[in-house]
Length: 289
Image: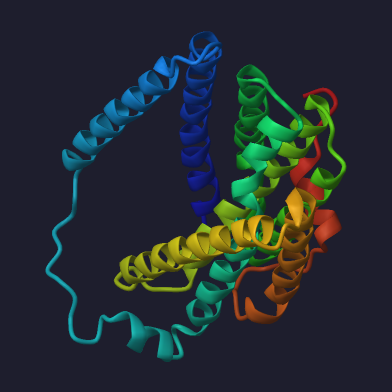
């Protein structure tokens, strides 16, 4: 009953540290990459490696409950074929397909900002930081919405918002528009991540969850790789340009989002609430707060 709230708070902390990393990396590049030296990139990569090693060391020291191994019946494919695995069987390819549609355009946003809109490193840092700031600010509200109205309703709304992200990029020309588009991205992805995680948790028993999350990671990685290759092929070989790839990605995202009500069914605790009402509850605020 508190998963949405807990994981929203945990993810909020993670994105807070991500924001600090963005600030540090952006400022270092802005100060050290004004010429052709490359020292700024070398320092950023070195710091990234150092912090990852620290993270790995902390993970190795973390508590791990005793694990006796999986039994013969604790396997992914038998679980997905069973009645209990019906939701997971539909959710895994749906999430992977949606991520593939997203990944068609995602590799091109950075070069579009740096080469076409011609943002400098400081402006690029500001645009990237706006994603993290908005996501961090709204994550608790998304978590509360998951706990109150169920993960299915939040997942459908967040996927619809993510599907709309590429369309503003068809006409963006300056930093202000980029920051606003990035803010929409941060707000949308925060709800998507929390609600998808809650759906995955609720679609399997504790013993099956490691298998389910492993399968989700594999499919997500494959979808990102395939989507990125498709996007670069459309951009380079077919010469569709940035706007053409953004448009294709947006249309495919809308198609995947439209399939969510059909495929994500049989989820308990969802209440009768429309996307508009849910959106107002998530982004609404008290004027005196």
